[in-house]
Image (cartoon, rainbow, N blue to C red; front, side, top):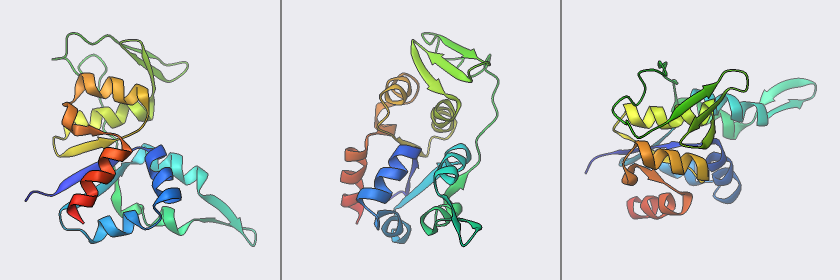
Length: 159
């Protein structure tokens, strides 16, 4: 059986922390399943998990446990990205830092999640964001992009 690696977006990580506080620790124990977060998602989460304790800035334990699962975002040239997907219309607005793919607006972090999965066949994207789902399904195969419910069902099979 091949190990499956899931790339989690920030909202998925937050929902898992709130609704399934032990899930990421359980996944770490499983030899067939792994999870990753992109560096951009980690930065986004660190801002939400940054607190002051007795005047000292600290990050939460749950955030610190993610550090071993952070993968680098990849550089790309917009002219060359998804060049084999001729049906895609991709625009970038540098002023707002927003990508538009076939009328779906994506943040830079969201765009990079899809790009990471496109360039790494071993990653499965987990998101509930409708725009990421819509764009992701145009770019990567359907079985490589899951919602939280599908992800939890797959994880249950492996546990």
